[in-house]
Length: 391
Ligand SMILES: [Zn+2]
Image (tube, rainbow, N blue to C red):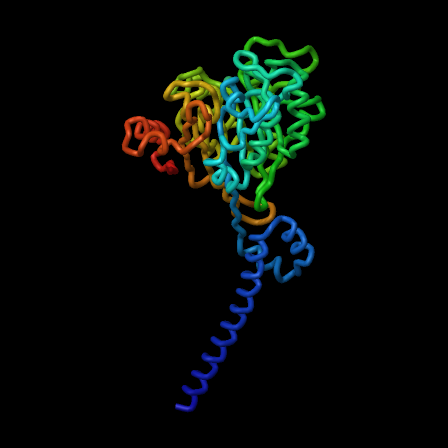
């Protein structure tokens, strides 16, 4: 009997001992997790003070962090649009056009848009289709709405020549908004755009199928990035070494076609094989569906073939409809060994209101049970039934 009590006591004390060791270990882990949720700055400081036992624990407890990305399509500032934004002679305000969608854009960690018309400023004289030049205030409104990076590679990049591009670049620099796909010099082009959020780095690349027949000035290929699969693959490879996620913006496809062409599909496949993670397509002026593309080495890339018109003066049911795509990028693993996963694909269909050119959620124009709304919803979900549709 005595022996049994002794055995019982030693089992209890052993259990208690293990329990307290376990709890102590847990405290370290919890502490580490709290730090990982903070800003990169804090994390850097924390890393400096990391002690050896913490690193030992870290080996066995991977970190998870995530960031959201939103993308919008063509911002085409026709004369009807800038006239609606004019507040007085040579002064414009485009901010009211974005009020309704600003919370979604601003709420994302990283926001991208295709700024199709160069913001060359009123000093060059504003112009509309077919050779656009837009006011600087377009940039102010995008910055105010929360846009972090714009693509400048599209068929209208060269509309008003190099001067409009250089003016636009100067203005984006002044605003602190990143630009991609059109550059001020060869050296500027060499520098891959990398944005980071919550310890995840995103590199951005941008290309266009052409420039409406306007020749690129000799020796100045950096003014606009054309689709060239070999060059693109090399840039994707470089991006992969520099960042966690590679986002490719691409201006391609046939205008007004609601489904991607074989050419679009082929380009996307090759970019994914080269390592692209997210592909944001635009140019057709109408929405084209989203799709997962299987990667050769496992995992999958996300593509939206066309984001449609985000703001434009084009009036035709499908050309007044665009949208905001939202993705969550999750990074799980250890310092130098992690996986990236694209999750929660979400889409807010939008509508451009006539004459005012305000961008509103589609259901405010066409009710959820209307044929147009249902058509857009099933069109976008065609190859990805799990795509969540926001209202
Ligand atoms: Zn275009």
